Image (cartoon, rainbow, N blue to C red; front, side):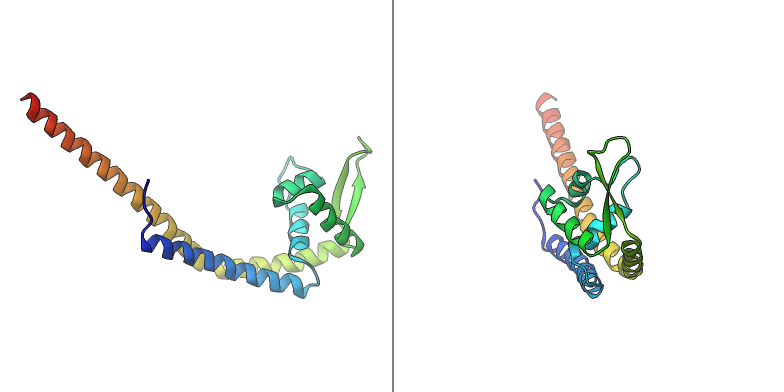
Length: 164
């Protein structure tokens, strides 16, 4: 297993710093809109569900990596604020899907636009930091391969001397 170098730690710390910088922006923007971080993330998850997935509480909780009951609490607060609504499906009245209300759509669109602009601005720093992390990993893999090749060559030469 490869040991991390000081450069690896520095690269990971820089990447983490870049992520935190964006998350700090996000927290400030979300609070400025009168929402909690989790509420914005849930609204974004509803709007951005991948094709083939429906905005059910279970699927949203999975996508957000939170417990089902935590998702229900977020939804209850969003529903009380007029940002989301629950809808029963026509096919199965037991199944509940979530949808953004017009108010939720407006607030999400404004926040998402600000986040998109910030990501475009932060992208060079994030990408550069990620590259530093990945280059360190690639260099480590290269060194590991070179070491294995050197050992193999040394072993082959030693074996050839022994036979010859």
